[in-house]
Image (cartoon, rainbow, N blue to C red):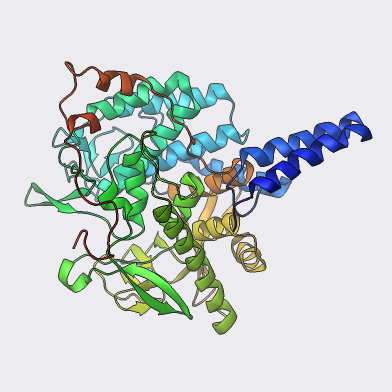
Length: 480
């Protein structure tokens, strides 16, 4: 998983130019290939056009979106035929839309029609505490609901908001004619309660009808969400850093894990595959930065190394124990309905836990989305084998299933937006590389905030004092 060197780039271009004496068709193919490789500098894993089989995989994933789009609101059900969605899954839908258009599954007209309907919802959606997106919405009427789909304001999740921020920025940059409208969505929100001046993220719980803020996020998803806030100019040094952490031995590899004790904090800190995969596929492990400041190369290298370790550890488990492994958090169709299928958590490797931190036997899974993430980022015989294990886990007219149980080999035939959207994302990465643009263009958002006499006064980046926290840590100084 090394970056292509500058010398290799020159060799690619020189090789393409040298083909000029062998015929125009060969020249064109050589130049096309060189241009593709230039576009994907820093790309790791699989690269190139989709094969006919891979294109069919993409069409299957898109079928889930078609089957679960609600015309009245433009939202997509988070689970097949279940009329709710979360803020994270609205981000999933945007990712799926961009991928479907870029891969040629839908034309620009269909893309624009769907995105415009979604933008209309986002610019008019009711907000929790009149500040930020509620955790859950009803897809049929667009109202705030709880997890039982009953009308309720249950507060917000900073982690889920971070994903939606990421994909509104990516979509706005890739489709400049829509950028203004994504900017206006963000300008509606009040960021005072969700992120502090140095980037600590706060979500809310709801007890007895009252929302209460609490620091949100653990190593992995915390860094992923902070990148979404950074994309809009927020200072995130206190969430982007990987502290506090400690190293534990898993399959002979020293793996960094979150050092906070869940018995003290009341929040588990699972190590799962997906946040690191998302950081690689979407950002190339590079945090969005203000162009006036250099990014912290060490942060990016650390997250990239973590991803490589997480993939390698799961391969070593297969080599040493014969257990195909691709673990992440995922829903299931029976209690507890959502599990954290971990590489390490609560002091042990290969723990599978409920949201409450209780062990749940028999719920470990070769997760479809984790497989596609590992397969596209790491081109090895092991990830080829993983893909074979889930390749049949779909129905062409419905979409991709969640995965295959480790214990029995049986399918978890639940159909979800997150898994199907990520299959599209992974295949788009194979074709184009990282999904967040390396350079961001100023738009309505930037122009609005540049007017110092007419700013929204809702704690946007330019409205905050400068963070004075250190930019490096000893591994234990932040978020204790």
